[in-house]
Amino acid sequence: MCPLDGEESKVAAEPGIAPGGAAAERGAGPSAATSGAGFTADPGAPTSATAQDPAAPPLGDKSDAWLLGRARELIALVQRSEKHEQQEIITRLDELLHETQRRGEPLLVAQILRAAALSRLISASAPDEAGRQLDEMLAHTRRHGATLLRADAHALRGRRLVLAGHEDAALTEIARALALLDDPPSQELGLGRRAWDRLLSTALNDCWIVLNQLGVYEVAEEVITRAHQAVRDSAGPHEITMLLMNRVKMLLGWGLRLERIGRSDQAGERFRTAASMAIAVEAPFAESLFPRKAGVAAVDQVASLASALALAAPSDAHIERLRSLRAAPLYPYDNPLLSIALARCLESIGEHKEAFRLLMEDRHHIPEEYPQPSMRIGLIHELARFADRYDLGDPRATLADYAGALEAELWSMRESQSAALDTRREHERLSAAHGAITQQALQDPLTGLPNRRALDDRLRTFATSASSDPLAVALIDLDGFKGVNDQRSHADGDDVLRVVASTLRDSLRGDDIVARYGGDEFITLLPGATLSAAHQAMNRAVTAVDELPHHLSHGVTLSVGLVALRTGERGEEVLSRADAAMYQAKRRGGNQIASCGEAADETETASEGGPTSDAGQPT
Image 1: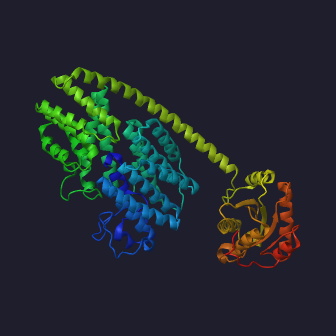
Image 2: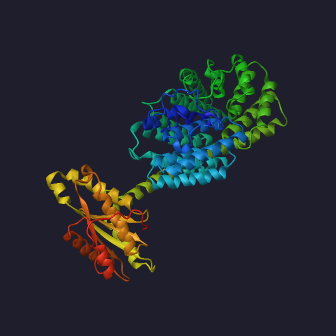
Image 3: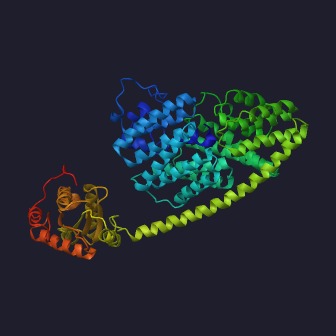
């Protein structure tokens, strides 16, 4: 509900998301979905969750860019809506999620899953539902190799744990996220550089939210600096505003924490830096996507910016502005910060009792789900300071002692948290590196398929299993591949191998295993498939390769030797029989499937020349 929490400030600048509503539908197609910049408000776009045109096309007729843009609008809207309205918005996001899951585009699904979970975290009304969706997002991003969004899922799980009061577990999730982000791949899922940088910035910012909530300011500063660097070259007014406002809030919280442990000079430096940023934010704020009053200065609309000026130099010049913001806050979670700033300005003109009354009032009205323990303690500490200095309240001594003891404990906890975070981050980084090395040892670098070592492991597992389920084994050799290497180039040959590998994967079931056996040979394992069903499946693969455009396949086709694993048969034995069957297909002219050593009727069926289409048959 505030820039500090990164929702209004961050989500509105969601990477990979185009401006929403009708504006996105009229945009420039997929490129609009990755820019996130140059937003102009569309007077025809819906401004609430229910403001849909009854004559509008159904979601199935909308573009991917429109769906992403609509999710962006709804996330911005949920932050400034009442609880009963928030549930309607969540329902709308669930409808978008259902449609994107029907389409099945991995990046689109991951981002809408994120939006659906985030709406529940913002409303704090359905944290268990958010947990289930974040688990789904984590599994989805791991399955599709979406590293940045996988890190973001960990970061949002950390946020949920903070809401539930599990701060130590939240740090573990942030450590996992940062380990993934410390050395991410340079590109994935076909993203361009700009969209990639924005996704990186968003994931880092989600980590920053949790670190800032927990008061781990040194690491939070490092993370938000990285987030800024990620979009430094492409940031528009909204991104600049977001980063400045978030850093202002962090610096103010940091300064108040330093004050409470007696480091007043360092605290003053933080307040002055925050005030400079509050002034600098005026120009980009006027062009940002934040809900705002046109022609009104940012410092007169955003409590954190007004508080920064007041804390840097408390005086009566700020009182009227702070009172106005306190009466109708744009971001309610800013109230404790605003009250401290207002109390110090009242103190500067001798209004000690009024300042104390305001602090007491806000202390009793902090919501139970308030996400920043450090700021709550800051308010209590300010009360203790007033009570002790001006002989206010009852009993002031107890209050001061309580606040001081609590702060000492929290400061010690903060240092422990920083050390624990560093340790876990390094552990996760090393675990990820070990996993990557293990994965590389089992993966063919050219095609991305399992290599022969991985194949041997899987085949050995099937051969020694007590299960009676059938297993079909196909050995595949490329017809005409040598001519590609000889007459064109080895680079063209490598391209053909990659295309064939991808085609084989796409032609078979999700649980079938396609591995590169060596050179231009592949092995396919079809668990649970009889020889007849496997023949139908492999025939689809032969047909798919045969029908590839010539500039992709260069005329290469497949010869397939197909056999079934026999009871007690070793892996090398079944592969030897598959190899013999493959040479039978070669002798008959290639571009076909052959079996040997099986029942006569199956052999006869398998030896028919040329592929036929069995695309509609189950496998």
